Length: 466
Image (cartoon, rainbow, N blue to C red; front, top):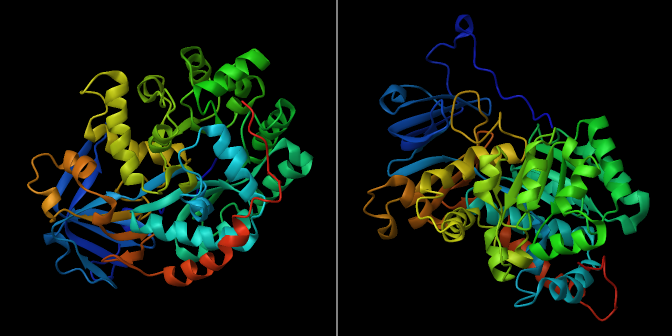
């Protein structure tokens, strides 16, 4: 994928006079920065200057004291972080939050979720997307990778509310070639929309719902049109075992033999990735990334989690995700960051693995790379788009601060995010949402829920059989 080019810093001979107003100055904060070896660090009593939607400079608070700006934010007592990225979700599924609880995966799909999704209208999807974007903005999420139906409605919400998103129209092989064609048409129609904040992907659902022929055709389209692919694969060990029995190879092996690994691909979950899959992922000619959403794996009682350490060892970025709120109950990437660190420690039996600084790296640069925006966002540095959040650490649950990285990952919560900024535009200020009307969405969605959740018709959008 080719993301929109970041704002280029001015050449020395074009340097703006000091009196030229900035669009936004955030001052007095501690800023999370990355050094030239991508190590996490913090600069205290700092300031971030924003012009034309990009970060112009990261400097000291004293240096900007006399610099004029159209808007200023006094961020004393707060930490500026790169905006969090939800690397795999189904945003409109917030409408199904809590509807299918305490069920095994197969019953969750076949008895509740896929029957209900057969009722979906474009308006349901729009309302769900509005509620989801509000939730994510309040949780410090500035970008998300979405994989769902009726995605024109989601794209319209993203354009309106100011977030950044990688969007894909999901399809199954049971939809015949029309499903794949609609996915392509959506991707081409919306690529670069919302002033470049929307990027797009082809979105086959998974190797167990999309045939090898359709996956191969998808890979051909991805290469022909320069599009990435976003899909589920090796979600759990049962899927891997079933794939081996039916097809003689793992789900990752299916992606390799159909050419998907020759494209830029974002793989959701991967808890069923085996040791034999690692060379295939390491040798992939495209940019390969995996999104991990540990809360859902715990809820489904899956025996394994995403093998983050093994993937990092072969150079595969692992981004943080929530999956849809129907399985995760939340779109809180902050929680995903803490859980990823804790679950990885337990899985590896090593308290030294996935430290707080490593977790912050996954939440920032690795997540940006996972969604194809590694040169655009993911760090607070000159030339990057101005996607950042301000976190208030003055509460009793975050004091005292002995290790700032640990405080951010294990003590702070998404509710501590005070301000969320995307492309230099303030979407939430002092916990006040500025671009979405949540009460109106909740009222209309409540009126539509009886029709949306009806299951007596006997329809399903698909059959889960792995």
